[in-house]
Length: 184
Figure 1 (cartoon, rainbow, N blue to C red):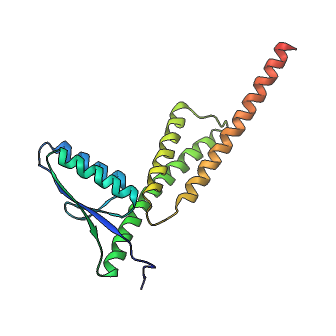
Figure 2: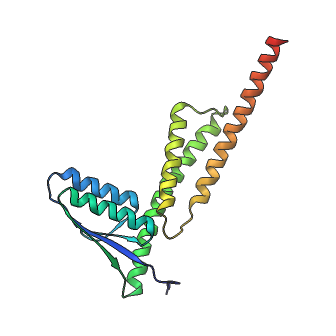
Figure 3: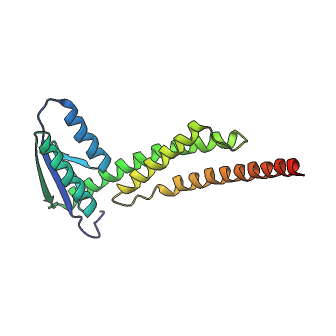
């Protein structure tokens, strides 16, 4: 059976909000998703305790109170290690899915650029790459248990950078030749 090298310190945000307006509930749900929180039980989100997560939960608790809801921050300790391992597995699985989505999209973009022969990006592709990089940074920030699926993504990004660099080199060489001809 798997064992934890050391127990994780956990914190929870217990909250409830008035049913209406429903946009407030959606706002809180989105914020928790951005943080990478998991629902421990209905109305109780959980995260590993660290200064960043503590500040984020604290800010959200204040916001919930501003929206007319109730919010309580708590520390949680699992009594049974198996329950804690299941909780960690849920966090890992959520990050794995997020990494896999990014890997799929990065592979697709890289393939499109490689097939294009010319390694210039359209504005849409450049925008897509920027979004992928931002998403990757957000997922890495909430990869609390170090899945490290980032290697594949970083490899793809490096290849995309190489393709773009070579296209910039040939573009600037062509520009130099053109200028030389004009000045010649």
